[in-house]
Length: 321
Image (cartoon, rainbow, N blue to C red; front, side, top):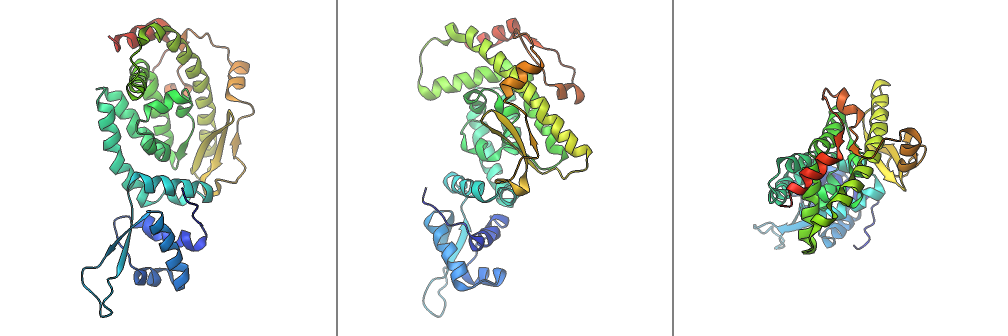
């Protein structure tokens, strides 16, 4: 992607479009709204048009000058969204994540991703996608099929890359993890099937299922422990009266919880003391013959017990018959 100069003038121009994603603006409209100089408006418009982040149309009626007036509107296609996401990851995600544009993008791509998942016919996958798009819109929408993110970095998805903007998001954070736990075999099998289809892999994967499930239990139990830690930090912030406006990141095996307003570039408000693997083995050497429920599931009013390996392997195999 061509480098775009994201200075304060570019940000001000983009703010108008991000908060008005359905509207078109010409130069005069922006000049009235922003009170900036011609160069400070036209240069960002030119760069954003070149990057195909802004779509351009021209008024049908000709003004007295005989020149059609350019009208700009922010693009809602995937390429433009990806470019904007990359831009704001370096500049600051707080404004971008809370913009009306993000809501438009969520509503546009949610049915597309759900339709893709419906090929496998599982309601749990649909429910997972809806929560995943809400909590992790940038990577979820760009993934084409969010459940595969669970497999590519085994289950770190349940505790990382989450935008927690209010108390209700903490509940959704729990719900996303619980949907996976309570439908573990179904979603795990779906992600494997999708990977097989995507890679046109015709091998008999039934011979690998036992080892894949054992590995899945191992990685889930580590991630469940990490989820508990992240949840405890969010509850600590809630009880202390902090504004709930966080981004949960996962960097080099360490969980970082940042104030979204100051991310990136800030020191994490909460930082796990060691890698998630070390923390797991130092704190709770759970037998790896069962799937460990996250502690918040019980606090959320759900009675859960560990799911035994034998049950998981039986259920997963049933989806490959």
